[in-house]
Amino acid sequence: MNLKQLEYFVRVAELGSFTKASAILNIAQPALSRQVRLLETDLHVSLLTRNGRGVVLTEIGQRLFDHSVGILQLVARVSEEIEAARDLPSGRIVIGLPPSISWRFTLPLVLGFKRNFPQAKLAIVEGLSAHLSEWIATGRVDLGLIHNPEPNPALEVIPVLDEVLGLVGPSLPGKVKPLPLAELANYPLILPERSHTLRKLLETQAAMAGLKLNVVLEVSGIQSILELVEAGHGYGVLGQTALAASGRPEQFSLRPLTNPGLTSTLFLARSAHKPSTPLILQAQRLLQDMLLSSAQPSHAGLQ
Image (cartoon, rainbow, N blue to C red):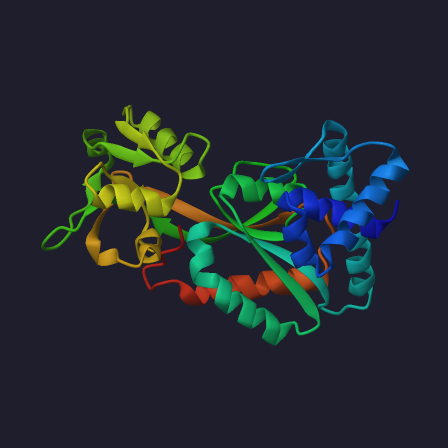
């Protein structure tokens, strides 16, 4: 068993396909298959099972996969710490972005990263805030932007931007009026499922106000929520940035919630246990500068 074999095995397992893995790893598929077979031979076990769509992990394969991911992360971390000892912004960093931020910031982030850290490598992953929190806590992601995180001793979080939330419906003529929170219960709502940070925020505020929300559909994708709103199936509760992400904000109205107002806070998060290398610290400053420069005069944040 060697690190290269573990790397090949992990990539095949993640992608569920030798063909896809060979393309990503830039290695011929027969050579990739041979390395995985050698690993199985050394361990005297079957790690992968082929099916009509590719390969899946066996039970023992899943155990090796879990350990292998940790081993490869540890090796990468050792390399990063050696680079950090030289006080250079080099190495590799993984940054996690929520979907509605990713569409807007991926290109500027890549350009800014290349300009400021030419010796470093960047990987960007996309995920919901709950998933990003878990990935940062376990070391899979180095730095991320998450909404309204729950207290977690494995995370260090810094509030970056706030965004006012409101009722999203079809476009209305004239000036849009704010909506008192007490009236939110009168609208059929299309909200993310209960584990979503936005849903938790809404449910908490509604409970404090003694309200029972009329949730007619549970949909976690912002684009899907907006499509359903546009089709007349209900109303969403989102921020202005979500409308901008749709590419057609003029098709919707947003009535800010009042009495009390409802705000979603975007946090910059990193692991509380992983050493902060010069690259992580400088990438954090780059992200903060980008977010602050994008904020509107009203201090609207990102959703």
